[in-house]
Image (tube, rainbow, N blue to C red):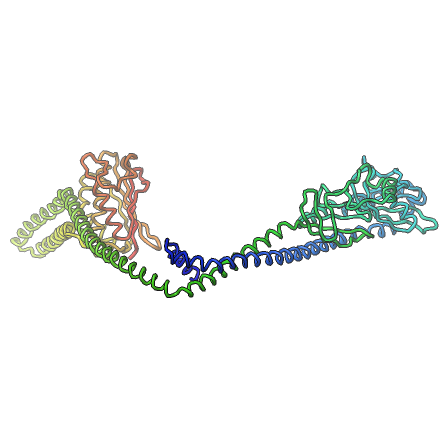
Length: 608
């Protein structure tokens, strides 16, 4: 709020006046001090954030390195047990000491099964002369059997000290791995050496799931296992002359020329050839004088820290600017108050005049809308009334026939009753008179239904019996179907539900739909019209279907639009009025595919 007030104050000062220029000069120094203070705060925050980010990154790098070292130790421990177990195999001593062919064959099978169960790439036994007598890959093209490995350091050291762990490229497979060797027999009369080779492809895959790169360094600083292909078999420090000679004589890395690695490591930091900086985490590896190194780029952490610094500096700047503007605003309160009061009075006067004019305009528009709505409702009711009267004209002949039949029957029954009375047969005369009473009630119901139909409808809605609506509709239009010879199927056997509607207007909708169906099947062989009622938990559906030619595709989508009709002499108002009536009921009138092959209409209404 203070910032907004200060900005409005400077907007007032921007007027080309001597007073405004003087105020600007007077308050320029505090704003300059705010800028300098913000710059200093941002620099200190950046220094702190970078130190904290690098500290956190060092901790994360060391944590990952130790986690990967534990994984490596677990893997090596599993394979270190194999040479110890193999010492107990009796065939090992027989094959190495006596040169037994049968023992060597049995040992090949045992070594092969053991390698398959443990996942070791190869397990083999070397006699005291350095010749391989049995191997898990015996019988294959890359078999070690018969090869001389007496020159290998791991063989010589195991014969001398009892055990050896040596990393090198395989002479046959040319795949790097760690050779775990153990002597068989006493040092004074050794039988030979058992060797298990360990490869690190699965370990590298596991390490690759961690952020950054992992390097496993041997005792000479050579990267022997890594997640970075560019760093494999590279140097992290220069080799001593003795180390170069030992590597060359043992053919430890075959023909690979060891070159300087992509990472220049100095303490806890490192850089690559492109100058990218890294944080280094170092932990001892589970091999003598070996190290496991993990590097993480420092730039992402520093960028995240810079983002935090920018956010905090922006908050500090906003706070300082707000406090400065608040101070300026308080120092010039009287002048600003007078200017604001004057502007407020002018604004209030202007807004009051605008609101008064708007209110007057809205009052006129509301009155016009009310009158327009009243005229619309009256016109719609007049149109519906005209539609009912027009429908009545088309059904008058049928209604007259409905009345003429009972009238003719009454006359015949009256003549018969008079004859029966003259013959002193009062019982038969009474039966005729009772039938006459029933026929007059029939005529009365027809006349009452016509009077109800032509009466100007009201907008009241309420529960209406669907059975009564269908009966009333049949009184009005049923004779037309009988005269035309059109089969009209309606629901039978069971009480129909009550719906929310107005009876007269719902009958008007049904009369319109049934008259349209009757006209549609006029030239159809075996004409049929069907009325169906389907109840749902939330409503009732009444369907009117026929087997006529169906709706014209050219007007099917606009059939409810006023003055759109498929009849040569039609006005196109009936269906539009019917849909409006259903909308007032809270229902829907829509077209559907007819199961009889013609046109179909569905009325969806609320259950009472």
